[in-house]
Structures are given as structure tokens and as C-alpha cells.
Image: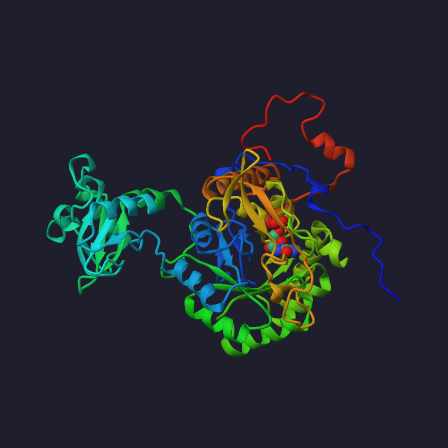
Length: 501
Ligand code: IMP
């Protein structure tokens, strides 16, 4: 006979936190949002810890290398989408890893025989005013000089004037050798009053630039997530089909953590994938698995060796899995049950396996609820798709700026490795939609505001760490009418505030 669960499964929107006692120490500036990304043994520290409890979804419309860099700067991790060729996914990972914080590969380069018109066209295209002049016009050619806006006056010159005639030549440039540390580079910039410092290898080839403006940016990102070599931390999606080829390529490209991307993870496919990774790499390669929505699913993946477990089926904003296939579970109930299983597993084995709540975050406070329910971090698609750094187009639709956002199970993404069950090698039917989300500007300011809200609520609950929140949180189910009461009601609103969602 079938098993019946007659209690309804709940969503985040059906819960609220009841404030607890907050001491005068409970201030947002005292709150730490650090949280484990991968499993660890009692008494030890996790190999990777996030500075903020947010990772970006393994989706074409969310996580590319630009998002990877921006999110690592803010303290989280992007999982580069796997529904692309192995080569291009590995190249995205490599680009995040080679984007050394503060050392920027030159993206505007010309040969000495280029013209003023070329310089102006390049400036228009990249928006950058520092152009490297190299012998072959590439980012790593031999440095011959630099053109900045101080080197030319358009009104007094001809478009055909050659760069070699007006650039600042190498002999008059201050450069630093390869191997210079970021703080040494910044000292030179300040001492010599420079806007940019070219880093040059022994053979005269340009390696990168350090820009004055990036120094202040570096200071403005105290949470940035770096590996032991001061490179940004990045994740990558894999699937349970081509892992024998994909995993080695991603590991070679420098991925810090992988995640098996599947709409339903309680399966032999995930077991086989995890077993293969452990056989080939032991514990050196970190890999999350999922998605599951109950205790059995969690315990299965824990036993298979997952480094974290992802929770959520059918709650994503672009997801139509529940309508299409009739599987899934309310996200809050899933997170609560899985986190209880995680805690039991920890008590029994001394191994703590972080839980990621994936999908269905609509309001910022849903993140705090997920953490309070036991999640260690959340994965977000819609949230990050709205920012400048997401890969999709920004469009003007009906007078409003929007960005495109499509599901991995939509015909647009055709991520059959995530959805195909029977090995048909194609997407037999859609489980996701193609949509727009309101454009919300740069990632940094949005993430900072979200984190401030999380910290503020944690203070209301008397918690200055996520672990403390999980211990102290008091959660209540709410009635449908109290949800109405929770918004502005019975007044005529004049206008919505900028931060209101
Ligand atoms: P969101 O943050 O609510 O937009 O949800 C993002 C999550 O939805 C992802 O991390 C995936 O787990 C899930 N997802 C992505 N694409 C699809 C799809 O096409 N159908 C169902 N779920 C999807």
C-alpha cells in the first residue's frame, strides 16, 4: 500500500520567526554570515566556507564567469552551468580562476600601427580608457606603450594618426615585474601617483594591469572568497552522464567545488557518479549532490559520500515540475525534514554535511527562514538573474527594464542531462518556462542589502552566527489572513519604496 503523509507540506511564505531576547551585542555589525560549504568532521573546519550563505544556480541564465567573479567578490560561490560543452564550461571556470583579484588581464589592446580611430572605437566597445600597445596587439604581447585619455585630444588630431606617435612609450612608463604582490603594486600606484600599473614578465610580455580604482574596490569587498592562491573560489555543475570526461576537465580548470545538477537526486545515477569521483580523486574533489526533499533522500546521498546535499523539487520560480509530473514538496517542509536528518546523522557519525536550500526564495526574508530551519546556505536563480552580471539580455519591455530568465528544463535550455530519466538523450517534455524578471542593477549593492536584512533579523532572534540562529530560532506557521496582515493593508499606498519587493 502507498504511504500517505496527510500533513500538508509548507512553503517559506507560511512561516514567520518569533523574535527572541537580543542583548546589546546583537547588532548587524557583530553578525557573521560565515557558513560551511562542504562536509567536515566534528572538531575540524570545513575545507571551504562561504562568507555569505548564498550560491548562484547552475543555470544558463544565471551562472557564467562574470557572475562567478562578482559573487566570489561578494563572498558567495557561483556554480557555472553545466548545460554547455565541457570545453566551454571549463573555460568559464578557468576565466574565474585567472581573474586574480586586483590583477586584470588587459581587455583593450592595439598594435603600434593602429590609429586614433581604432583607439576611440575600442574605448566605445569596452568602456575602458587604458589601452595597452603591444607588438602583436594581444593582451600578452610585448609591451610597447600605453594610451590613456591623457595621450590624445580628439579635436586637435586626425583619426588616422598612428598610435606609435602619441602613446606613452615603454621607456617613460613605470611597470612592475611578474610576481609583484597586490600590496606592493598598490604601494607603487600610490607612491608614483599612477592610475594603472602594467605588470610585465621577464621577456617583456604584458601579464596584467593593476588599477588604482580596483584598490578601493578590493577594500570595499571585505567578504571576498579566495582560495589559498588568492584566486576567486568557483563551483561548477556536472551531470550523471558525462562525468568521466567533464569532472577531469573542470578539476584541471581549477573548479573548487562541483555539484551534480539533477532535478531528482535520490537515484543510482548519483551514487555511481559519487563513487567514481571518490575512486578517482578520494576526498580531494568536493562535490555536492541532490536534489532531495526528505530524510531518506538525504541519508542516501550522505552514505554515497556527498559533500553537501541540495534540497528542493518543484519550488523554483521557473519550475513547472509539480504541474507536469506531480512530484515535489513544499520547500520549507523539505528543508526542515532534511536538516533534522542531517543533525541526526551528525550526532551518529560526527560528520556534518551542509544542506543547501535550492529554489523558491521570493523575498529576502525567505533566506533567513531557510537558515533558521537548518539550511547552511541557499541556492538562488531568479534572485541573481536580475543583476547586471547575469549572462542574459537586459531588455525594455512595456516601459520596464527586465532581464531574461529561463529554466534548465525549458525548450530554450534543453538541459536533458538534468531531466532525462530513461536515457533518451533528449528533453522529452518541458519542466521549466522562459520568462522575464525585473532588472535590479548591480549584484554588489543588492547582495549587501539582502545580507543586512538577514543580519538584522538574526539580531531580532538574539543570534550573531548562523549556527546560533539555528539553535535559537522560534518559528511559527501563519494563517492565510495573517499573510495579508503582514503586508501594508487598508491604506491607499502613495508609492512603493525602492527596496520593497
Ligand atoms: P529560483 O531561485 O526560485 O528561480 O529557483 C532556481 C532553481 O530552480 C535552480 O537552482 C534549480 O534547482 C531549479 N530549476 C532550474 N531550472 C528549472 C526548470 O526548468 N524546471 C524546474 N526547476 C528548475
